[in-house]
Image 1 (cartoon, rainbow, N blue to C red):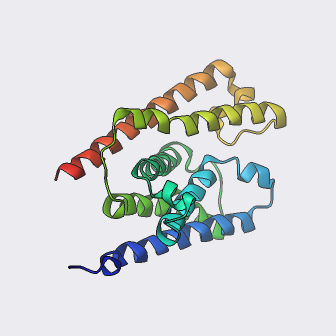
Image 2: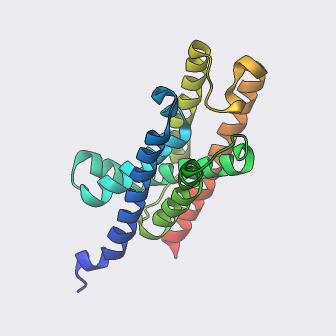
Length: 205
């Protein structure tokens, strides 16, 4: 019989790397930030990287705690895989190049938007134990980005700052922004459906 500790060694090593790089990148970005800290933590990118860091940390090192049990759920970890995938997709297809970055900011930017998303998706694929997911899971996963988008609009109207151009109601108007949000929700749902199908297909193998 295989020792369960030994069989988990690759997961622990890979997960430790993901957790370390995630926390390091977030803290380094915080160190490099010269503007509003509240604005920094209003970026979906930062929130999703925090979810990645927390998920891997608690599910590997504190799996028997209530938080660890929550983050060990395949539904929760698949949701986080969805969110961090969207971070990479939207940034690299729409937002990359809009800001001129220099020095260490280039490194951190690519860590948060490229390296960590890839690493977490690999972690999800190879090391997260799969159980059957249904389409209701995908509906629940949309709640977090939807709440985030609504929060961004409300906060933006108050402080006159929006984390992403497609949410800038002051510049583009609410009709355009609401349309943009609709597209984003559709993208989340479609990507979530793909992850659910992939998850269930892995189980059948």
